[in-house]
Image (cartoon, rainbow, N blue to C red; front, top):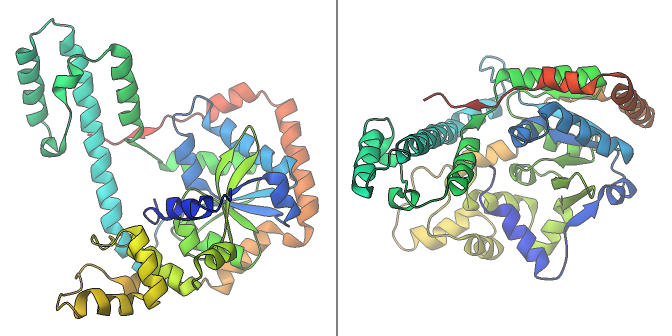
Length: 384
């Protein structure tokens, strides 16, 4: 999700100079991080199918931050409201519909592949010859929707061990899961119960989290979505390790200095990489896009170089100006004030201590096993 290959590109750029992006939560506290915004949807999805209960993982995450004197603040994706949304949010919704549609199709395809594996296990027990096995599986595939997109090496499956088959099926099954409204309701009820602050965004959480971080209402954002960097988030956190209490830290000022480009150039580079709102230019690889941004400063100049001078047309579906508007969008003072009221920022240190104490008391006094069982919601596979 997010900008294609952006995190890998940045990480490798720093690693080439022997610089690690990993830091401890105590390091962040010393840097002045008091509140970290968390993209709730990303982590709910990550915790689906985890051996521990989803609720337990959320509470453990909260406790890790609170133990380091950092208040977790969750932002939950809201439902798109066409009538009351800003022009930028409407544009975001329209431009992302294609990406969302492709993801839904992919999930359906993976669901079908999972069913094919189930079928192959059933008939494998019938001691069929390879030719019989191959014929029956192909007939099963052709009888189902999306059969033309299914690419399963049937000949390999015929000789696979059951352990390898189960491992493959587990991998495919996870790709069919999605977050339902009951998961979001569970998250909200749980956070209410342990008094962890949260807010709903007007559609997706990305832009709101970035804006809050720019205004220093939160000092960092925890997410695995690289879009947050393109929105201009000053400090992005990824890869939270529950055992070592470390995270990978991406600081925008440091990244821009390292790349020797401006934020506006960074946005154009991200668009060339490919985002949730546009496909990348196929002839441009990440290194090429970066080099051209450094040389030409913006997409207009790059297109003049690689298309106009060669007498070629700019791709019709590359609506880079609209994508820019999405990443440069501003939030209303009303929305920001709403978040400010939730956080009660003037008493933030007192709030951190009270929340930590309340969560510790919850662990001591409440039968957590029954509570986690109550909140344990099975992940949704996409309906066939």
